[in-house]
Length: 240
Image (cartoon, rainbow, N blue to C red; front, side, top):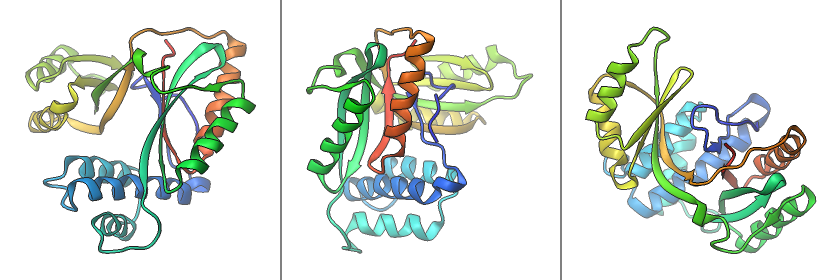
């Protein structure tokens, strides 16, 4: 399930596979529950909930599961402990700076297990601020593009939509926006007739590192173990 997100170049995204489907749905449900709890259960007025639902649907999460997660967030269902979101900071093989986004119902369990994963795989969990200083929070939107698309015209549409920056990676146009402008930029891109693959908050590294082949192998091992942990949602890094 682990793998570098080629279109964003800034993090490693979880992609659902058949053998991991239940785990993937569990992770999506946590994000949906948190979004519904913080902003209400209507995705029309709660943009974070809309983002969480869109990502769940990309992984074919059933509607009943989505509805149940929303109701849990709004308090209509009261099963289980409260879920919270925690962002950990660490350093991996090759001095890769990492941000680990988690959702958990047990803070002590999660920090202990994440710390153990780092220690056993050539990394170290850091203190607050140890890695965050090297990342900038942004809104990130992936737009699907055809092979023969007019890239100059797409770039103009993105700029007119309010993009702060953009880049092309294979068949994806990645559009960056200030976090507070993500919703507006996404809506403007949709009005311009563009197909949105994903939209989310992300962290862009300000300084990057390049890994040797051996360091890359060690880093991928760490990433794979993190990816398999039920509480880990996303990992951002500063690999060039």
